[in-house]
Image (cartoon, rainbow, N blue to C red; front, side, top):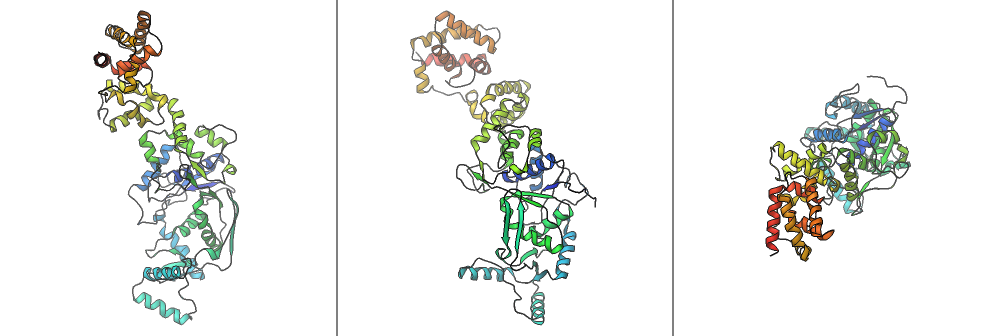
Length: 498
């Protein structure tokens, strides 16, 4: 194994392939990434896939692909290798077994033969007596001979044992948390001797993570607040094996601003997964920016930063102790800032994909169609919080309303409206090139000819040519309709005004 230099910072993000990349997981990865990069340390990806029953197909791929999309890269991992591998727990079974055997030999762990049915009955009895469910030592009060008989009976019956760790009695486990400060949890709150190896031979999370973090020389562990309760169990293993524990930091919970409750995968009022935001046309830089500010704050009032700026200014001591508020409207605002300043080609590609998905554009668009979508995208970029919105924003180009609304009809009720529209029709028909510049010249010419100006000119012109009173720049909008459609709209409007 490679020898790292003293005080070298090594951190890891260790996802389980039990689902796709969630907002909370993405934040954990980003904070570890920024911590490593800001201290010129090493960022490691490790796949914790020992819970084989819950692993989902494509889970690992989703985690890694979406992290890369966010702009996160790593120095070691299952896809890039490194000196501390393997980087998948499922490939480290022999490594774990060595340390399980060591704890068994020292008498710090033992094989437990209670069946799932017996454990369930124990829990139900405890609940019936108003007790918190906990494991009770199955060999309590037995002599070595009685214990041996009990074990043989279980083995003869084919019971596959688990391995449990002996929890020390009356011991406090304390650590100086990077985020929370001093934390102390007593061993009596753990729930009794806990499983370190399952019946199928795979280690449990709280055991494997200690072995991996020690052997991979992880110096700091930054993770979510929900892991606080796991820390005492892990500290027990560090103590039992005579190892020094890393520095822990438990990041605050993320709560839904609307409900005030913890962001949960079961909360359907808010999008939870990075993949969903990608499909809606959010930008990776915006997502990185927004997620980084969930539970961490920079000095000053600025809210928009590049990834390089975040690396430069990141300070783990500014991680918040208060719950982070996930505000969907704030995310939309952040993304809109990025959309407005993005390259038109990038936004066009995303908008085109959204329009194809909505069947507004052919699956294999022609060059002219792509160019038309580019102009459409440019028109709506300032308004879009994410590119999927173009489907609704530009609906008038794909679904012409049969009738004008009452408000639109009121705008056309003025005596000057028909005069202005008829004059505009003639001027648009005469245009040699149907461009936004020439269309605007035609509208200005109507003003000079008729004396109609301001809202009394622009609103009837917009309604007549586009069949709606709302929309972006009038001349550019009319250009996108094209000469034939714009004139057809005007004719239809004039017929309704008779």
